[in-house]
Image 1 (tube, one colour):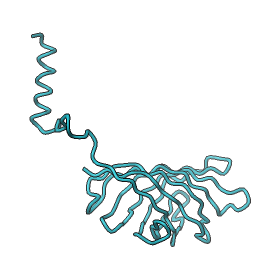
Image 2 (image 1 turned 180 degrees about the vertical axis):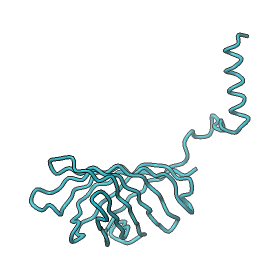
Image 3 (image 1 turned 90 degrees about the horizontal axis):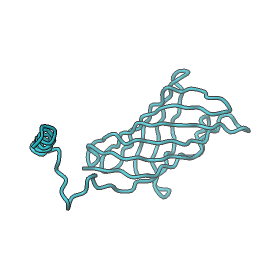
Length: 163
């Protein structure tokens, strides 16, 4: 047996011995995932500096409150033509626990009312508490919000995976 082949076999054996190769032919390679959707209804949106803001509110599903959320927004940069790029972090508290996200967000301002923004974002689930401990997943959000009157809502939809 050549040296390279021996190293590959030893590497596989070590990986299995450390428990990192737990998948079998009958088990999935990814944790079970469930769909998740709702709407962020803001009760607070406030700029804290030229490049940061905070938000909070209620999470609704099918028009009924099912939880709350808080958010920190940062790296807010005007890109031109009414587009704003930023990052965010959400804590989405539901009855089963709290989801934590790291977000890539684009906002497009309305030409008629500069306080109204259309959101398009990717919320990467990076963990949580309770039933969402060690959660992963991806939520996409879109919607419209008036950052002065807080009218509107931001819908989200995707999946959450928990080992």
